[in-house]
Length: 72
Image (cartoon, rainbow, N blue to C red; front, side, top):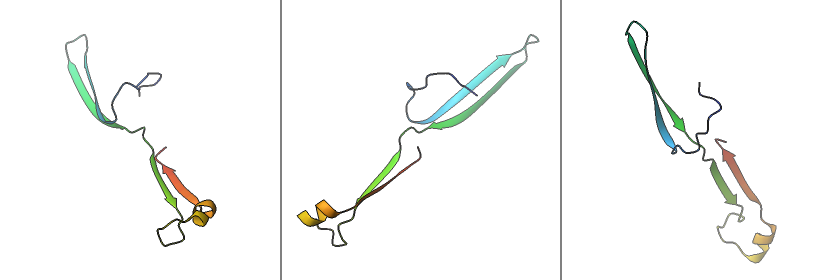
């Protein structure tokens, strides 16, 4: 686990972490793992235009704006 670090400089997407250690006897062990950095939220917005997909002045002023945010 890597905590207390600033990872803001890493790009979005798949990141690979690799480690290699050698003990006093000369034995080497390596390991790697991948993680996904995804700090972008999925946002969807729908405007209720009363079903006809056209918006007149009455619909715009009385319509409902509905949306969701996920992966936050």
